[in-house]
Image 1 (cartoon, rainbow, N blue to C red):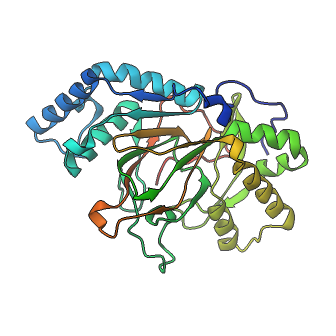
Image 2: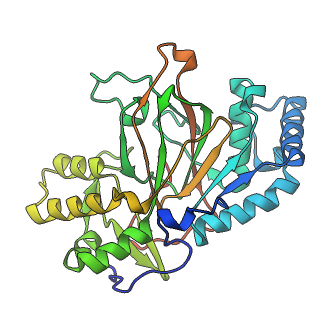
Length: 320
């Protein structure tokens, strides 16, 4: 078992709703010059017949915007843990062009990794799943999406279309949650450092991992309760009453209203969040009966060059 952090965390990654009551510095508006640079990069790709995803960072050159993206990379790892880039004119592009631009931005921030068995590098978050099919994942429905982290260093969401109503995005600081665990439920903290069976996608059998881990002075975290419960079920190793109680306590802290920041992503908004520092959720929503008009977000999972290192007992994932 790795060393248990017993002192309160501090710094910009520890925040709550009041932190941003009069602060919207987490929103960055693309400048006209940056949007023009994106258009130029797209035209240059077309000129040499390169299409998504068969191009590299050097093929989608963003010399001015890259400086900003490097700043955002540092903010994601060493700052508040999230940022929203606003103003990408998605209405001007067709679907292929949107994918190309989004992927190009991802390449200039990190390395996109696959999200499923098919090797898809961009996931479509849209209400197209069959609720009667047990293989349907929640992000393919219009249901409430519980707080969780994704299996990558950073997750990106580009809003292409909003829902008719609902679909609010919510973020919670992991270090903020950890501090509450330490102060209010210290007797349970150690349980999260033990080995749990986690049903990581792409594995034949769930593998053991801790949920929290401290390495080189940084906190590592991974959480999706459904996959923990599934992991223990598949391994025929039922969760004990105290383990269930610990997860219930964690869930009760995560959903405290005073901890979260809510945002309605607008078409053209790109939200990036560090999965070690941020839990994310989405409210249920009402969608159009017309599939072509339904809420649509595009997801990137990024492996980051500046990501925190991980100990053996915490085999972090970056995609499939």
